[in-house]
Length: 336
Image 1: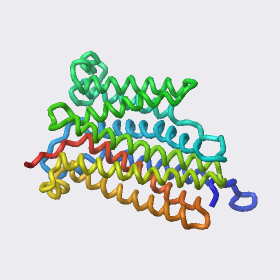
Image 2: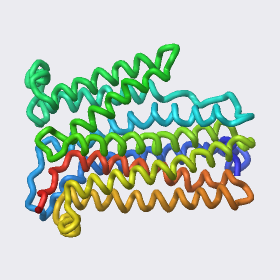
Image 3: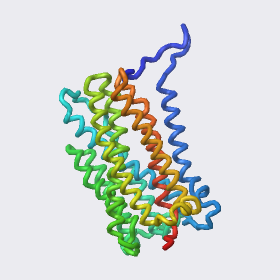
Image 4: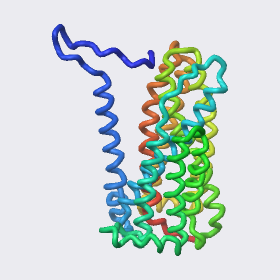
C-alpha cells in the first residue's frame, strides 16, 4: 500500500478520464453533511420523551460549537505532529500545507455566532439590532464569549506571521475559556470541573488534530522509512491521550450523574443519551486505533495501518460533533 495519489486512468480506450479523487471528495462531503445533521436534528431525538425543555438556540449552539471544537483541533494537531516529525532521524523536511489559518477563521465565525447568541439571552438573534455587544461585558458568559472571538482573531494573525507556532497561545486561551464556561461559579467545586474539562479538551484536540495531520503528512511523504516511524510514535502518545480523555470524561460524568443514578439518567435524560452515544463512538474509535496499531506492528506493509486510521479520523469527527451537542443540552438533575 502506498500513500501516493493514484494516476487517473481512462475507463476504456477513447473514454472519459476517471478521477479517483472525485469519489473520495464526494464521500467527504456526504460525511460532513451527516455530521452537520447531528447538532441540527440531535436535540429533538435526545429530548424525546424525557420531559426536559431545551433552549431555543440549542441546535444553533451545537452546530457552532462543533465548528469551534474542530477549529481548535487543527492548529494543535499540526504543532503536535510537526514536533514529532522533527524528532525522527532521516524524516523528510516536507510538511503539508497548514490549515491553521482557515481553521482560525472558521473558529472566529463560530465564536462570533456564539457571542451573538449569548448577547440575546441564549436566543437566536433575528437581526443586528437585537445583538447587544455592550451587554456581553456585563456577564461572565459574555466576557468568555468575547475572549474566544478575540483569541481566534489573534490566532489567524499569528498563523500568517513568521512564527505560526505562536497561535498556540490564543488557542490555549479558547480552550481555557471553554473549560470555564462549562462550569459556572454556581456549580459545586467549579474549579475542579474546569480543570477536568481543560484536560479533556486539550487531550482530545491533540488526539483528533494529531491523527488528521499525521495522515496528511504520511500522504505527502509516501512510503519512506520515516512514515511508519511517525505513525508509531503518534500511536504511543495517543494511547496516553486516550487514557487521560477516558479518566477525565468518566470523572466529569460522575460529578454530574452520581453512580447510583447514572444508569437511569443514561436512558431517561437528553444529556445521558447523548453521553451514551459518545461513549459508544469512542469505543469504536478505540477499536479502530487498536486495529491500526496491530497492523503497524505485524503487517508486511506497516502503512496498511493508514486504512483503519482514516476510519478513525471519520469516527473522531463524529465524536467532536456529538461532544458539541452535549454542551448545548440541558444538564441532568443531580439526584442525591
